[in-house]
Image (cartoon, rainbow, N blue to C red):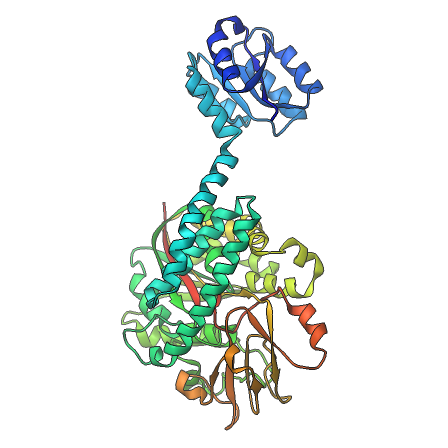
Length: 517
């Protein structure tokens, strides 16, 4: 194994013999120069220098001047600034010029070694520690999955799996990622059995999960701040892992007061789950109370066009005190700009609710566009794309503006998505819904082991389009295909993100309460 080569520029290099000897013994090769000009010449001609130590107070070119010239032709090489001067403005200049570490003379050998470990070996050391920890945790997760997990334990299991996914994202260990994927599939299969066994009873159980239709009553209304403006943003299709990816960005301006989870109702699809959230009712209750609003799957027209009306009714029927509120739906970039331009007006409301459709559009576009399939080729890339979008989105800019005031922020979603992999054959008539993760229709024929089948939709709070209509919901990572052109549609939809069925990703959703810092 070749030695790691370091360039050290210091006009008093002869006084650093103990440090240089220590590094040589530890396996590093140190190229020594006494001024900034020589340092630049070496860096321009030698491509195998992996780190630079720069003395700040060299004659001729100072350390900061040398640093600025290095960054012109090499933006990425790690640089450690060493100085006798502890002046704050000097440190700020160095940090602003993108140094990787800052040491104050006299430096002892262990300080230097620690700095090198942080800079050069950090990724490898973290990766090795993560791999070692997951190998131990793998056994613990496997044992827990073989037990009879409660509802709360299933939520914690999902959060554990996501935590390991995010940790392994920064690792190059594809073998461990593959093992985690298999463990997650096993978890989804067991979770599907758990939901099939309990779902009907949960809906009538006061001690059951917080579901879509009681989300606002349980988590939003009791936590509205009375002395400040409240803003709720519902990101359509935001999975728990995607929340954890954008959370660090939000924490630059906000602090988390509480992070809850709730269960999306079945089907885990916008028409059902989001209408239930805004109405505070099951879809069957919405159909009974607002017959002019509800459209079944086989009926033409927009299925989520009355959320503002439903929200207004729920607020009037639930809150004892009258509040000033408003609702916005962001479907495109123009809607985003409108919100940004009128952001200060939101502060006049007690509650502002914003529905943001970008994540949903991203998942659907990925199914249809080859370029997005490549950009979001797997879970890690899908998360990365979500982060990049949010980092540069108008909604983030709007939140930064709001963070300058004292507001309470709520972040949630209506359901998540799962990357499907296993086709499951279904036979149905033309009136059957087209969703790949659930079907509602007559004369459905399917693989019993692949689905939760509901003969009477009313028992789980769903409307019945026809007197003989039934629902089926795909479990795990399965997706429904008809026999016609089976191979073609299998190629088209396999490895795409879908929703409507039963999985940890689709059903267990975040609800987060934040305040400005």
